[in-house]
Amino acid sequence: MDQEIKPNAVYTTDETQALLKISSSTIKRMLKKGLIRANKVGRQYRILGKEILRLVSPAVEKRAVQSYLKVKKKVVDKINKW
Image (cartoon, rainbow, N blue to C red; front, side):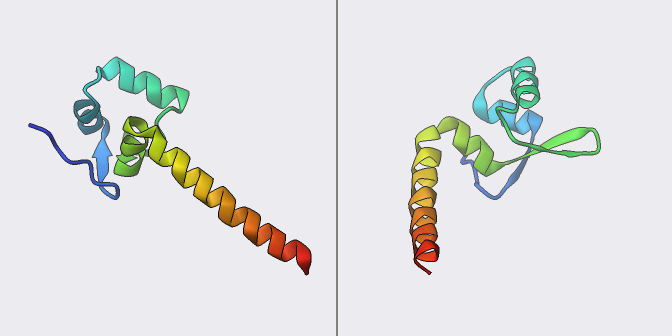
């Protein structure tokens, strides 16, 4: 059963582990190394769907960063002209 990852949904580590089909030790290691950004709620982590999608599709994040940098450059250029 394939499950759609919703960008704005909040997932537990168990749900993320099931979606990515990785072991619990792998998810813990990824959290510890900062490969997955998560918020800690009490003693548990919560992971945004966007973060999971970023892991499975880094090309999407790369395009988003490039778009952001283009917009930033335009803004900086405009400000510098003043």
